[in-house]
Image 1 (tube, helix red, strand yellow):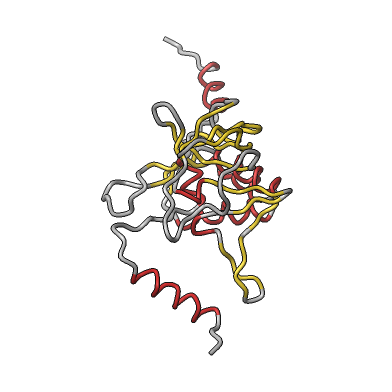
Image 2 (tube, rainbow, N blue to C red; image 1 turned 120 degrees about the vertical axis):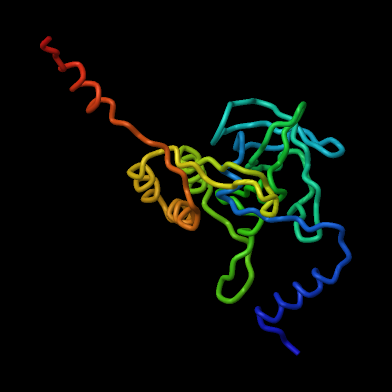
Length: 225
């Protein structure tokens, strides 16, 4: 009997749900991963150790700039494994948080994206798409991705922990103007997709003051005593 896409996904869900595992990994969307990262970098693996690799950075999309950093490999799960084994020369985009002597990849495969030629492959919940009723890996043109992520990080910061059930506050702060967001969204299709995802969140906005309109009247103020 040949299964359609819906039936196939249902069968996989039942199989994974029936496995005896102690915990389940929580997938977070790209906007949360990007908004949480201390640095977002593009480069290649320089050397591989047992549970980590040295990463040579070529571009920094967010945060402080470094040349070489040590990155801990994320713990692989049944539903979240590396696409390929880590090897020297492997090109990646990493979303990272600082630990004492190394950097930690945020949310497994959602924070370690593979680059091949002019394309980058999304991870986590955004890794798979349907193309002509067939499952395919979700790839984006690298230049579009870099522009969108860089612009996004100028506008949003995620506050909270990677645990939906912790009961602690989780929200985004908007750190740029609505006009800037509108301009960023117009750059390419991936920018539109990324920024429109933010419409589902309750966002706290910073107050932007036009100091030219405030200070000039004050400077022209005179007091007649």
